[in-house]
Length: 147
Image 1 (cartoon, one colour):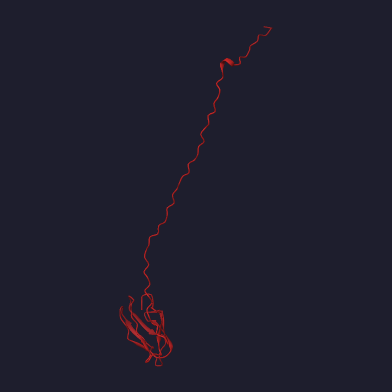
Image 2 (cartoon, rainbow, N blue to C red):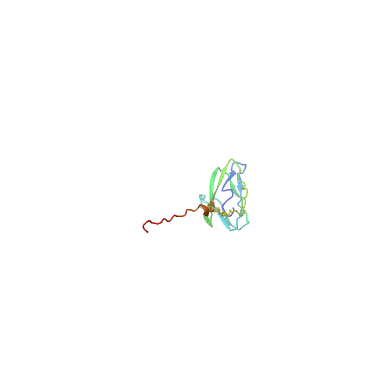
């Protein structure tokens, strides 16, 4: 029994072994648990019942001598369910622990604003000619003959 459920959720035990097979529940969660079979015997008692298991406690041993499925649940948390499959195999081993995720910082690049310089046209100087005063056009004033 672990905090997130059962490990494994389906447990296979060899019901055909000499004398059947047995198993125990170990409460590795941080809360008390009470595991009980869903189906009852003919007298109305559950097929198995761990009673209250405090954190770290191990249940009594439960034997399985017939080929069948035994559904169970946690009395304190009925949505927490599991199955014991009594068959010809014996495969009730713990799954490896789930690795704890580590917080790795993510680097988010900050955009850099690069300004493109604006090209301002530079005026081009065009040489101009300075008029030569010797070649200046001087208007001629004529005298009227009537004057």
